[in-house]
Amino acid sequence: MDYRWIENIRDFQNISQNWDQVLLDSNSDNPFLLSDFILTWWKYYHSGNHLRILVIYEDGKLMGGIPLYLRKEGWKRGFLKTLYYIGDGTANYTEPLFPLSKNFWNIFLNALKSENDWDLLHLFNVRGQSNLVQEFNPRLLDSKISVKLIQDHLNWAIDLSQGLEKYQAQLSKKLKKDLKQKRRQAMEFYGGLTLKEVNDTEEVKKYFDLYVNFSRQSFEARKERSNFNDASYAQFFKNFLVLMSQNGRLTTHVLFVGGKTAAINFGYRFGKGLNCVLTAFNDEFHSLRPGYLLIEEIIKKTVLDRENYYNWYGHYKFYKSQICNLVEPLYRIKVFKKNIYTYSLHYIEENMRHIRQSYVRQ
Image (cartoon, rainbow, N blue to C red):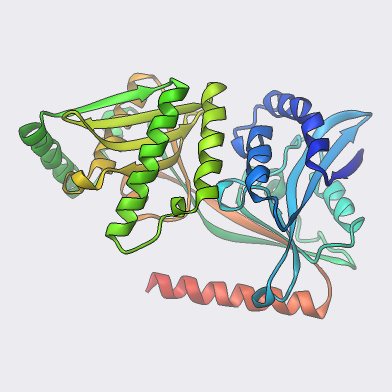
């Protein structure tokens, strides 16, 4: 096998159609490997970063690769030159495009060793079925490079394969009683609930703008700051969701209380089931718990549509623990050059991360 590093976004644009075809042929369920995601994110976040997309070929045929970028860290992180997956926190999975039947680690480590301009590679949100984990071997030792696989947090999902009734039986009685009461209040004071599925791209744009307003207002009410206060962050998501909608890879749900929009949800349609990416509610209806009511309506529709999987991606949120019945581990992977400096920074970072997590759990 051969490989090359793409450092100019135009070079990736030139192979983007071929890249997407390889992705679709692989039956991958990772939308964060789509060229639309890579190109859109880079459009807004290229400043100060350096593109490093690894592309792998076999007999001249594109096999896959992994989209990365290089960032020079500040003094708090020791001025390391770190490789990250394109998308940062907007990429809910950071995995390569590569057949499981082939050995990715061998060619990946060789490609990394061929470059001298990096100190550390850090990947987040790697699933257990990824070849990065499946092919991981503690003996991935090298005189120049160290590799660490770290079990990090959890992926949350709803398994509806046993039907709606059995799923609902698993929910807490308190939650079910509360939502029943909120539903009754919505009927008595506002005339009931209505769920709408939006497919028109122009409507998607309209509801995204409304979503941003809802997100900012709800965070402000809690004296916090929404990520969508950042104009680049908001514009990136808007453009990417529009592209997903145009390609039939997005489902937008809107919950109405009476005649007013109460909550909005965007979900990716790539791979199995529905994958929730963004949810926000109208703070005017916060007493009705509109986010929960929206989720409840989407779950009912999912079952009616004969689907049985509703993915909520990673990171703990209290509402996820209430509604999800399927959790799976997510991993972090760190690859760093073997020297005292990078070793020391690695162990300091991991100890600080452990302390913060312990503090949160208390």
